[in-house]
Image 1 (cartoon, one colour):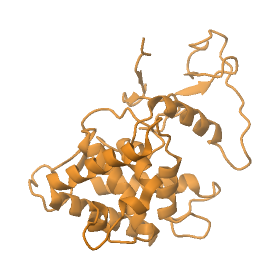
Image 2 (image 1 turned 90 degrees about the horizontal axis):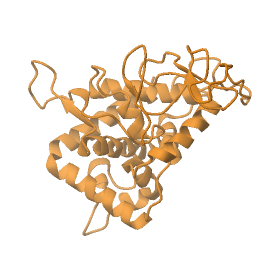
Image 3 (image 1 turned 45 degrees about the vertical axis):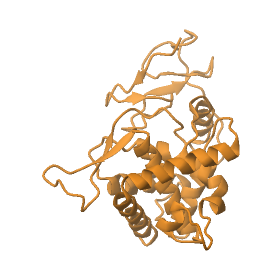
Length: 272
C-alpha cells in the first residue's frame, strides 16, 4: 500500500521526498526523530512513526556543512524513485552522444557542435534534461498571456508532479515548474541555487569567482551523481537517443531556440 501524499503546510504543494525543508518554499516542516531516525512533522509532540516523544536527532556533520545528512537521506530515497532520466544516461557516454563522422552526426552535434568543451557539454546535459521533462509531459513551455508567438520561450509550467529523482537535472528543473517563471528565469534560479550549494558556506560566491565551482562543473557533477535504476547500458542509451531524436524532430525550431536559451543562461551566470 502506498504512503499518503505529503504536502507542505505552508504552500500546499506536494512533497515527494521527506526532508527537513519544503523543496518549493524552503520552510522547515520536518525533523528526524532521534528514536527511529525517520522524518516526522516538526510541530507534533510525538513521532508520527514510532510514537515516541519527539526529540530531534542531533546529526554529526562534516565541519563547515549543514546539509550532508539530509543529502544522504534524499539520495537513499531517490533510489526508490529512480528513473532512467536522460541527463543521467547521457553523462555516462558523452562521446557517444556527440558522435560525428563524414556520413552521420548526432542531434547534440547539430545543436551544440562537434567535440564540445565542458561548457557546451553542460548546456547539452541541461537540454536533454529539459527535453525529457517536455517529452514525457512533466512540464510545458507555455506562451505568455497576450504574446501568442514562438519568438520567445514562455512560461515554465507543470503538467504533472515530478515522480523521479530529486538529485538530478530533471528534478532540479521540475521543482521550478509552475511558479510563474519563464523557462530562462526558472533555469537561472535553479542553477544559481545549485552553485550556492557547492560554494563555501561563509559567503555567497558568484559562479565564476574564486572559491566557487565553474557553472559547467556544477551541472556535470549533479548529472554524474544522479541515481539510476538497474538497467542495460546500451539499451538505455538507445532509448534516450530515440527520445532526443523524436523531441527535436517534433519541432526543430523549438529545439534550437531551447539550446540557444540554455547557452545564454549559462554564459550569463559564468560571466557574473
